[in-house]
Image 1: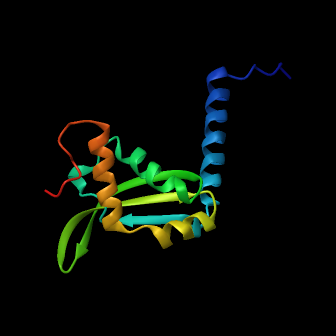
Image 2 (image 1 turned 45 degrees about the vertical axis):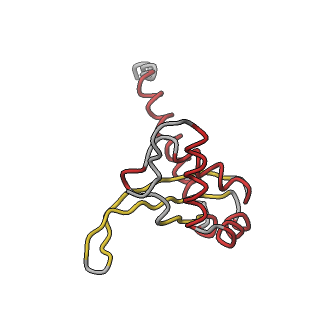
Image 3 (image 1 turned 180 degrees about the vertical axis):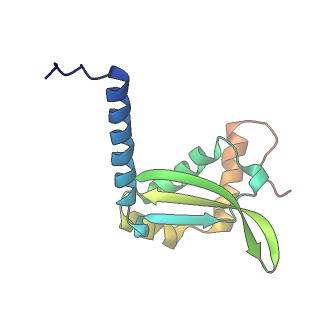
Length: 131
């Protein structure tokens, strides 16, 4: 039989990248739902910006280690009307941290603190103010 051709470096790199993606996906699937806190009604869709994730992290770190913050804007039917809503999912490293966050977070208070954070960060118009 003829000698085997050396593996294509691009194919090897792609296979390694695919394996890394699968491992990351599997790791994310292991996250227990009890580790996730969903924050609703904190900001309006037009108020989502690059700084929001950092602000959420700074407000939630006191409850425990944060694995990830996911900000999702979507449409949902509310009282017969379709509205755009923002849900912020905070994934903690353990379920005790998530339980602490659920116990102590108050949406109105969080909105107020986010406004303060934004005002302290810069003097630009406050996107967290009610529209």
